[in-house]
Amino acid sequence: MLTFDKVRDMERLEKQSKKLQKMPEDVVEQLREYVKRKEKGEKTSSDITELENIKSTIKRFFELREGKIVSAALDTVRTGLPPENMTKSEETLFYRLTEEMKKYRESFFSELGRETAATPMYRVKKTLPTFVGPDMKSYSLKENDIINIPQPLDELLLKEGVIEKAG
Image 1 (tube, rainbow, N blue to C red):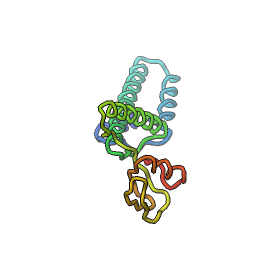
Image 2 (cartoon, one colour):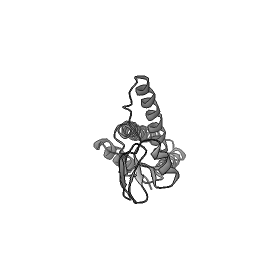
Image 3 (cartoon, one colour):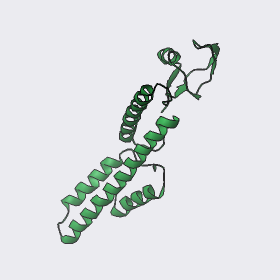
Image 4 (tube, helix red, strand yellow):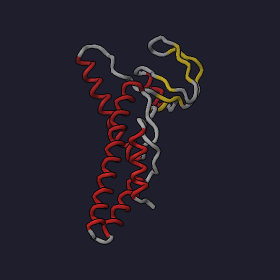
């Protein structure tokens, strides 16, 4: 059961670290229930003040995580490395952001006439013997490697279940 001290500790931990902190998957639901419980309580002036403090602490906590997710999405688009410690709902936001950022970068760089946009990274699901791709380069795919594969080879390997998008 959440308490104001626990909520403050969550905010403090999030504020002290540059990376997302591990939270229970149902942290949002726990916070909602906690606020509902406090709203149903007595309505003295100290209770009202405490409820306002709780809500502002939760808002700061949420905004800290939100900022880290936006920053991580930009880093992932540039490097292909996804962050850790996101809840499922945060992952949904994260992947929507990265997809939109990738589209934007691809559009921007294609308009400049050069392809310097970040290309997708893939995780190898099945080890394959070395082979020559359509670009006449040799490829050696080992299970669980994170790699970058050009089109149209990536489409074929995705279709065959040999690779999957990383992150």
